[in-house]
Length: 330
Image (tube, rainbow, N blue to C red; front, side, top):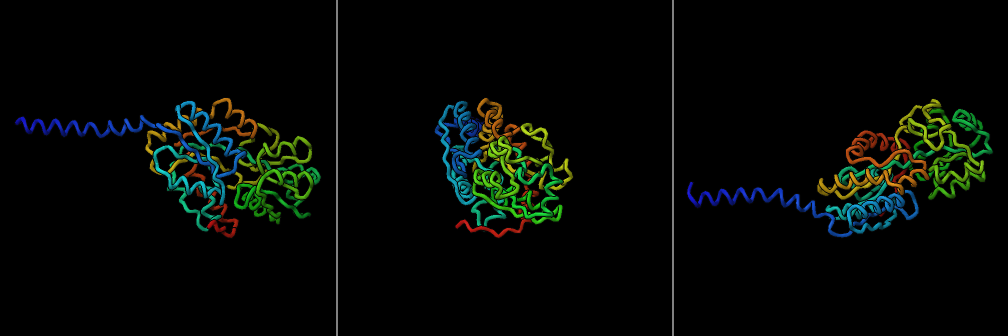
């Protein structure tokens, strides 16, 4: 081998060795500036609380400020559009819910993004059990009682939004038992539980934390919880399945999630996923989970992908079955 050939060979080998090193060094340098978390919903709700609690943990562990920005509107689609358009560098993330990633493709004429393909899924968080609670004035004590009551009386059933898991549950009960309960949609849970306490509606489905005051005051009675497992805060309340309501609507539940724009390097996504799982065990997050009756901690990106692949299509079809008119977000 001549000196010129040898120099070319050595130079080429050195250049090839630099490529993976540069990529690794780039990932190791993250984060070099503050991270922004966009929340597609107003301040004060569970999604916002999670964003701030988990964001605080990320800030402590990563050594960079984590700023939470609420960009609510159009059922979470405004925030989702902003994150979709962001650089996939790990500096713009989003806390959102299953509605934005899944149901919106059915509920909205033009969401402006693709929930499956425009985002990388980082961590899955449980939104908690959503118990069905009936007004004490009805005398209902169980799902069987509700069915009998609804066959003899008009029943208004409160939900926290058209196409929500609560709305899906009402539709499933009507279909299973030949009922005609009317779903009444609220913009927030507070007025819904006020109406239940006052007797304006006979039943409602929502978060344990928001309903707790009604339960404690003896104005509402929890009669069933979705999913296949009872919730720790209401251990004596049976699931829908235990009471004979066998339907996918009572198996698939909504969730909260941390995602980012598609294309964030895997090293960064994996690091964020690991930190989210750690944060789920922190005292602050445990306190939030206890308040909201949430029994599951944050899950990794791999676990999230598996849940999304299995339950996503089912949830979408359940919303389609409601035959709702699509809303225009433009």
